Length: 87
Image (cartoon, rainbow, N blue to C red):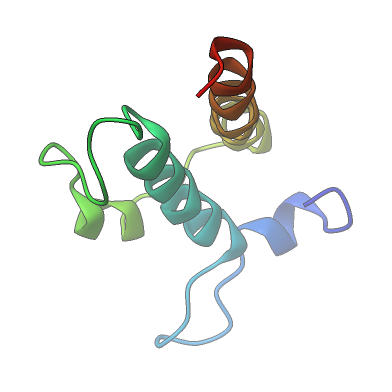
């Protein structure tokens, strides 16, 4: 994401494609669903609204990056916690 301009981050090349921001929003939703309570539940969480992940990208690069960094942090922190607990 750092390699593209703000314009490129939100650009849609044609009607059948998603912009980078929408793809990131979808990945964030997937990470949240997969890494929340992953020791006791598997797969999709009932509160995930996957279809909405392809609507309305975040308004700014800063908002998108904050969303991304929170979820990437979750994916790094949870396995570390498991290792510390001896699972």
